[in-house]
Amino acid sequence: MVDLFLDRVLVENNWDQDELNTEREITGILENRILMLFFACAESQKCQEFLPALNDFFKRLKDPAYIEYPKLLALIYISLDQSEEQQEKLLKELHKRVLFLPFEDPYRKELQTMFKVKEVPTVVVLRPDGSVLSSNAVQDIFRFGCDCFRNWQESAELIERSFMLNEEFDNLNMRTATDPVRRLKYKTEDDKRKKRWWNMWGKGKGENEEEGGKDEAWDSKRKEEGKVTWRRR
Image (cartoon, rainbow, N blue to C red; front, side):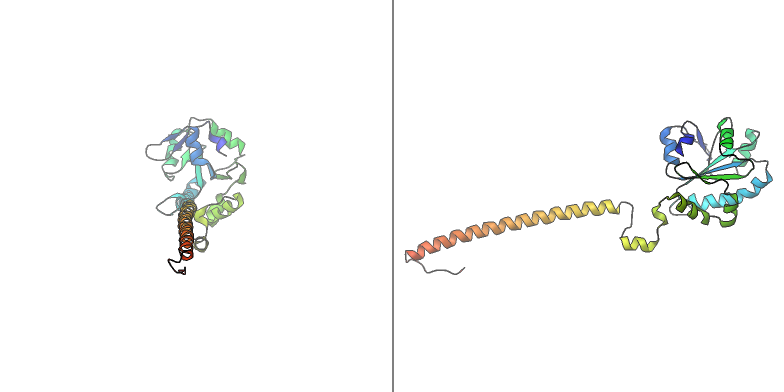
């Protein structure tokens, strides 16, 4: 799925319209995510009616102001507008975390042909491996809102820690993503401490036994000479 945009420039729909054009940037923002390709144009009445539902859907799954753990999801606007002014008009109404292709990039039309988009709005949903999960999820987003993302996630076999139930975390006694590492570290350190203590204890015990053996031998010798009586140990 990342391969679709590796040789392209993606732009973030923020105030600065930051460009992502390196392999590292593109991979970092798209890898291991469910990808939504939003084909639309500003002059379409249906697109204007769909925008509030799409914005609410995306906001509730990605915006830290609404959700503690933003979901593994990316949304790219593929403009089918006739002018850059029309594209900019629609971008102003989209969430600021949405990505888009520059208007001058002919790859917009290639994607339209690749996914056989014949009407707008169309939302093509792709699994992380690039296979199509839904050829048009517009109606699902209208009807189910954020709930349809869980179905996409299960279908894509995308495992996300924040989707686990709280009871599962309690059973696993895990509180952060680094807990398993810390547990292994502390367990190793505990084992080392126990080993050092055991070695010291064993060494001390051996020395005492050795000294005790020397004392018994000495007392035995003294007893034989009749100078002392046997002392019990």
